[in-house]
Length: 178
Length: 178
Image (cartoon, rainbow over all chains, first blue to last red; front, side, top):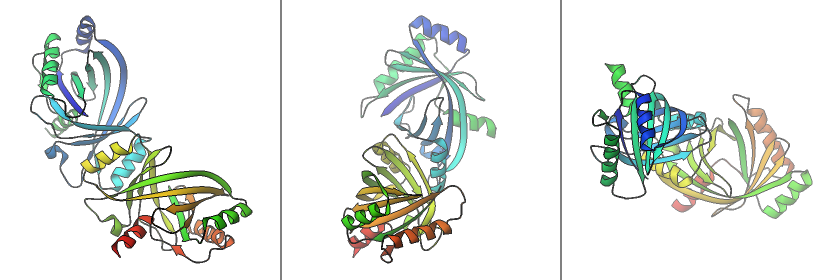
């Protein structure tokens, strides 16, 4: 699967919730997500622009691999995600085969859906408010159109700046190393 | 978890089934198992005596990590196993993070239980008949007693030789390289 996603800093969750409701977006689940990111023993994932994580939510646990971004503006990339039985077991296996825990990102995420978009209001521990808009594409579908649609939706919601291509994990890392 | 397991060549499944039933062992499920073993990009699992595999059975899919054997006679080792959503996705993730498919082992396994033992009659594609007896121990339990019990049970079933410490995967490899 290819996911096309763009995120931007926003001023306030309350204001954005209003705008989303006015637009007709439908509020769906709210989720607490804890993501443990791993470092590879053979490559620097920050340099290869990949990510391997275990995500634990209120209801499920996943392993997710994200491939390098395919273009500059959006975060268009290969993503493989599967549910697993246990975060503790997955961690144990990853560590045994040479991977090490790099960083944990915790957030409350409020999902909205609108047409073929998935919209998230992300309250990440240690960061200011962000909104993310995503479209998922099957196989080798052309992603530039999806990307245009995403930027248009941001505009309709009053967001024309503050776009951020850096991951939450790296944003947190930059704060901690500065 | 620590698993203590010993396997031995047997002459005939039919004869062994009779002996198991005379003993009072209870026949449980029969399973087709397909195991895909992976090679690590950083170590030679054959040398470090580890294994990483995806097992697909009639009903479930697992990732299993097996640590180095802790002693010479039985195959006493750390094992971490968790159910996952999809073998195809797990394969994709392992390959993306640097692992490669090494070998596939297919077998029909007939399970029996007797006291705290799990007994398997293994019809492995490409190998002669084997029987495996296993005890699972929690945490740091002493495994030498478990190992003695396993060898005593083999004796009660008429097996005093033909013990094999090499994994099915390696046995198949030895056949193919000779």
